[in-house]
Length: 544
Image (cartoon, rainbow, N blue to C red):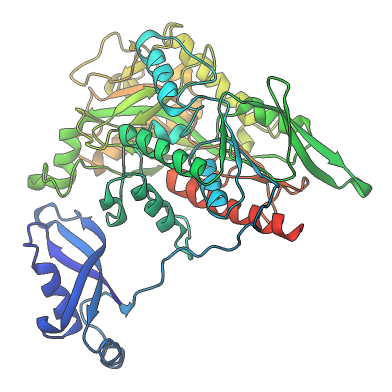
């Protein structure tokens, strides 16, 4: 098999043009091309009048070795590479012995915990999965209760429950992590087995959307249980049992649930997500090494999706191959702060994402169709431990301060404070909204957003919005809506781990995923879950 990259074709090319381009790149007769499949497809819309599709192709040809030798000698034409297709199949690193009785614990059933549990199950280790929230269907009902009736369940919401925060998102399945073992492909392949659309294997920027994610999470849970894994929902880990040995060596011996039950285990995966603030506190109290890390805070911004489509795609807006347009924006503000778009959701909605009483948090969500009227994204400002220097957990207090301010500014009912972009830039409160109708439920309160973030963030965002308007025409339209606040961009802490993926100072504890500071998004969290599962398996076998 040969991999061809950078095959460029016009947006409206006929299907047969792909094979023809492959034959031309290889300089072979079409009859010598035995098969041709798309490995990856992206688009280049920098020239709106001439949008191109960019393919990576896997092909089989007659006399493959001779073709590769000739191209290596003569040099391939066309700007891309012609190489043997890499082996991207997943290879297991270990397998549990027959009748192996020890069982690892996986705390958290979000994307990281899901894949840690799946891999451990596939390797024969029959993990026990503990999640403080509910099964995904029940959790969805509780989440909708907040959105429709302003009733929050602190243990079952956008942040907590089966599927994790990624369930209520755009379902993006791409990442910029280094992935030499192609573990991301393993994640995508397992998603397709769980009834994800097969095109996620070929699209450069695949996504799934909330409704499809719910069914996929259920299907993966069924696979884990079939392989011997065991789920326990509404099982919050309230404490951790750590044994201290000679010379201060620390080792996990089990966990204690909120109901008082103790579960013995000497291998515990912590995939608790970025909002498990009480668990962070418990770990800190138990002496697990934690340090503060940077994250970002800001607002959600909404525009008509049609405006973004036209600005990005021109006359090709609405083309089904392109779908709803997205964007990625960065501005380096004069006060030294970086402002950037975060978690952009084409054709989506802004959702209530709090997990604590008396606080307002926003996030973005899309369905697979991305067919809602508005585009939304976080417009956020980077913050660092220099902004919250008091303790490793000071970032949590920093987040809570602004979430509480947003709750007050919204009226104290889980409505969110909102402001027209034109008013925000002018520094005047909004008393009404314009042509862009906010999608946030349970509703918004027009007001002044400046009390909802630190002054440096407000100054930086005010400077950035006109700059973004110079990159995307109409982005700084007066009637665009800002809704506050976005504070859960990533974990405010890092639970540091060593080269064996265990806690620096507590053996048997495997910090994992976004909550531990090692992932950002569904795909990278899934990849980290695979790495953690492999590390747990190897550690358990080493103890035999």
